[in-house]
Length: 240
Image (cartoon, rainbow, N blue to C red; front, side, top):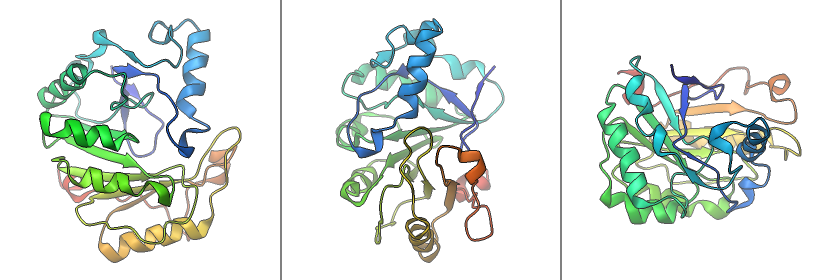
């Protein structure tokens, strides 16, 4: 049975790697860290190391047993391209994704430099989506790194969105996700920041997905932007 996810833009999660370390301002209130420490306290066997980066070899083949085709977020509790994750293990994860051709796999990283370095060595099946997180304008360079990979679907997650990003080059980008930070200590997102990204997507014809306004109670804040819910997806997925 797949691990159903409450993340709005995916269906399930698969965590052959858990744990991470902070690399940029978007990491400050990491939800995965809070959850990992909670799971460790509950004696969950996958989190005996808490939030220390850990490779789980026993979980490598898990998606092969999920027969129903679904959208799978890879490593929602870590960053696949963390320096503690070996290239061999990354290649093994890609082998599983290529073998499980009936699923679509979504990967997100803030470590775009390592992604760029390793990408030529990886087998980018059509069902493997690659994304980078860009929380502020100082990290737009991650998009340039992403663009140089051979991923069929390339996407950007502007979450948590921490400031105005007035211009981005969306050429070769297939999807944009935007969201405010949620949970304890959440930093507020301005509606103007979201709207300017939405407008850039509309101008360039890039599918736009608004995940949440966030805040301490994200359900109460909701997902509506200017009178509607924005659930746009890449055409390659919609037409599949």
